[in-house]
Length: 55
Image 1 (tube, rainbow, N blue to C red):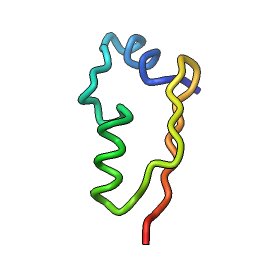
Image 2: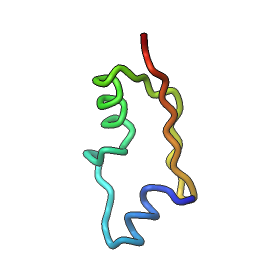
Image 3: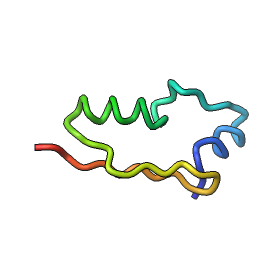
Image 4: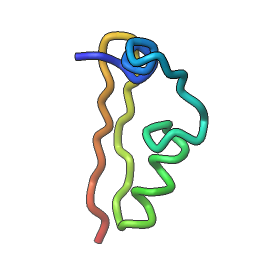
């Protein structure tokens, strides 16, 4: 397992706030598709986003 920042660094990239997996963007995208972000973890050694379908 690996986090977003560590993976980006490994690939020679940097992450930004407009990255699709950044928490604010992910919440917005999921909500637009009828999902709610229940849990979000973005650490050096892991990334996990758990969403629940609404309705």
